[in-house]
Amino acid sequence: AVNLHQSGRLPEARECYDRLYALGCRHGIIQVQLWGLTGRLAMSLLIGDDPEAIDLLDQLLSAHADLPGGLSRADAILAFGLMAQARMRAGDADKAQEAAGRVVRFMEESETISFYLLPGYQGLGEALTTLFASRTTTDSRQERRMLEITLKTFRSFAMMYPTARPMSLLWRGVHARLLGREAKAQRLIAKCVDAAS
Image (cartoon, rainbow, N blue to C red; front, side, top):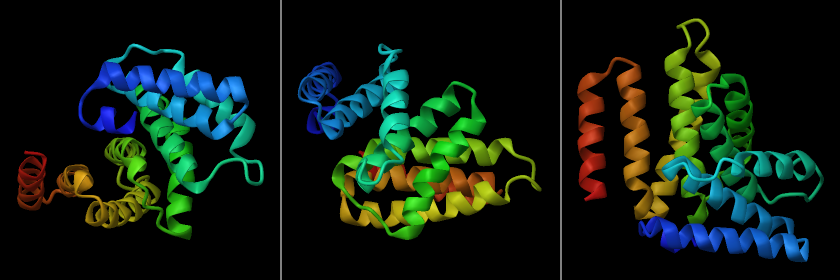
């Protein structure tokens, strides 16, 4: 499913994510349910055809995220990164910041670099830059700190997985633009375009 997703074969990826979720439900395997739902939410954020994905994922996270051994760190990062993006797009900045905060706390404890985290990290980048841009200067200290931690992790992630370089460069460029560093922003965005080509 992840390979199909990242190669742009979205309808096929969506079918795989649906099958994963159904399989996880049938066998009571939370991790497999989460993989299916995070994939479905990522697809919904791209093509908008799955309005129930966010509610199903929210229910799963509410039931299992805070239990000891409930979710692996990587799975929680993936899920909460996508939830932050979905909540931000829905206009709920408080819930977006809460979800993003959970991911950043994981990052502060230790960097987690797994190939399948790209959609979660992408979602986190969008949510945090949007939050940072929407706050006044005095309000933005927390978002700025969270964004700086996130961008540092993105650089490490992009060094490990070249497919993540465009994402890392994009959010670093957006961050530079938000700080008023236009020349740096333009350089980073140009590198993003080159890396994606």
